Amino acid sequence: MVFSMQCKVNKFVFFCESTVHTDNVVKTLEIAFKEVTVFKNEDLLHYCLPVFGYTHERQASVGRKENDLRFKEHFGVEPPTVAAVLTDLKKEYPDSFRPKEALMTFNWLKCYGTERTVAGPWRVGCLMYLRNTVKRVTKDIGSLKKYKIIFGNFEDGDIYPYVVDGVHCMSDEFRLNPGGVWFDHKSNGAGVKYEFAMATRRPAIVWMRGPFPAWYHDITIFRGGKADEKEDTWDKNSLYFATKALGNGEKGIGDDGYKGEPDTILTWKEGQSKELREFAARGKNREETLHSRFKSWNILEMRFRHGHGTHERMELHGDVMSAIAVITQYDFENGHPPFEIR
Image (cartoon, rainbow, N blue to C red; front, top):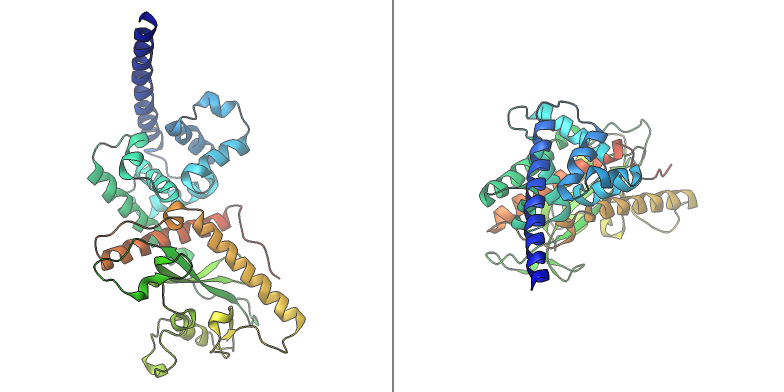
C-alpha cells in the first residue's frame, strides 16, 4: 500500500516536472528566436529538439549525425534547410512571421498529427489558433515558389532541358462532389494529381501545376486540354505552351503517359540511340526520387483529411504541396541535391 502510494506520488511529481520542463523549453525557444534574422543550424538543434524530449544532455550523448536525424524525423528536413526557409520567411513576412509557428508548421507537415497531438508538445491551448496558424504558414512557405520554382534559365543548346511526371496523392472521399474523376488507380481510392518537372542539367524543380482530379491523364494535363479539342481551346498556362515558348525546338522527357506530342516531349520509341535512351531513363529515375522526397512527408503519404468541401480541400492540398515543393528545392540547395544525369 505504501509502495503504491509512493508510486502515485512519484508519477505526480514527474508529471508536474515534465509539464514545467516542456513549458519552459517552448518558451525558451520563443525567446531565443524572437529577434533572429538569420537562423543557424546549431541553434535549431539546441532549442527545437528539447520540445520532443531530446534534452541538451541527450543531445550531447550522441553525435551530430544522430541529432540531425532526430531533427529530420520531426521537421522533415535537416537544420540547414529549415534555417534557410525560416530566414527567407522572416524577410518575406517580417510583420507576421513567428519562429515557433513556422517550426510548428514544419512539424505538422512532416508528422501530420491530429490537432491535439500537435498542440501538446508545442503548448498550444486553442485548437482554432493552431488550425489557422498551420494553414497560414503553409501558404506563406508555398508562396516562396515564385522565387524557387521557375521555368526557364536552361543551358543554351539543351534540347531536353527537363523531365516531367505526374505525382499522385491520396485524399479522403470528396463526398460533396463524388465521382469517378477522383479515383486514383495507384491507391485504389480518392486522390489528386500534380504535374512536376525537374531540370536535367541542374538540381532544380522548374515546374509545378495542380491539383487536378486523380483520373486526369498525364498528357491531358501537359497539353491543357484533350486531344479531340482544338489547340486554341487548351489552357495557355500548360507546360505544352511553356515548352513551345522556349523557341528552339526544346522537348521535355516523359514516360509512356506522355505519348502524343512528339514535337514537345520525348518518349521511348524504336530507333533512338542508346545514349539518348540511357539519358532519358536516368532522368525519369531522378524524377522518381523527387516523388519519394515528397512522400517522406506524412501529410502527402497519408490520406489528406482537411477541407470541408471540394474547393477548400483542393486549395488546402495545393498549399501543402506548394510548401513541400519549396522546402524540397531549399533542400536541394542546402546539401541534398538529386543525383546528376549528365
